[in-house]
Length: 322
Image 1 (cartoon, rainbow, N blue to C red):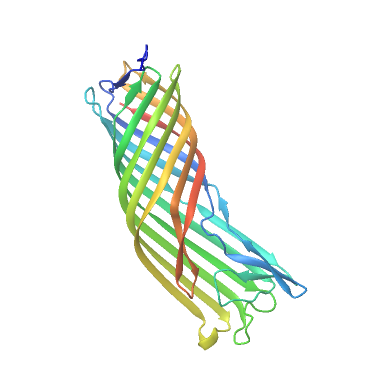
Image 2 (tube, rainbow, N blue to C red):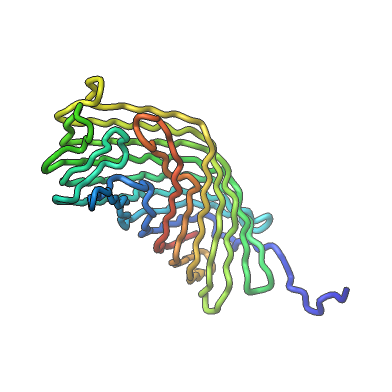
């Protein structure tokens, strides 16, 4: 095999003297996919056949933050240590109103198997907080490509809640004669806490005059526990056996993993005889959680299901080091 005449050199890069401490602050505007697959059905009847259109929940754009403090060892060996915090609270909401001969059917309750003209609405939120502590080491391929492998620890929590309300304007939501349900409320909470490992890399492709194309990709794997609560209340009637509500609880230890990636542009420069460093950057961020949300399929069989969660949006910020 013939060797390359001009192989691309790989070498370590080191930070300049005096540029060791730093802070980074980023603002995000993200939209997350709906973690609650259903909350109600719009139902109609034609020639004795029921037609149902399941309604999802609309995701709203929200602002979040990603901040970090860092320290880079000057000269050799040039390792960087970074401690960061990611925080965002996605929200979701939806509503529908159906009049005669159509109607609304609450989707989570297996006992409410009837429908009636009425209204339904839901609001949900999911607080995402992750903390990480990583070590980085930068390498260069020639003069134009920088790659920074990263490894460390990650921990945090994802706490969600939702509340759905249903009101019948005529008729009832219950098809059996033993209950006449005209109002129903479903309140749901999910909490996950975990700790694990973070692996990935940053890459920069130099364009010139301080500008560069940047990208990163991280894989986070955690182990922790989930705690789910579902409370259901109906009025004015009662279930069979005289019940007017239901409460379900679910706890499980399990893993959770997610991918985090960014693609964007940046500009950077040194000042005051290379004693200060300023970096301005902006890009498109994408996240995917393998099981970002858990919920009960229905309150009476206690079945819990994992739902995927994805988010994407703009991120922009500044890094200052001295």
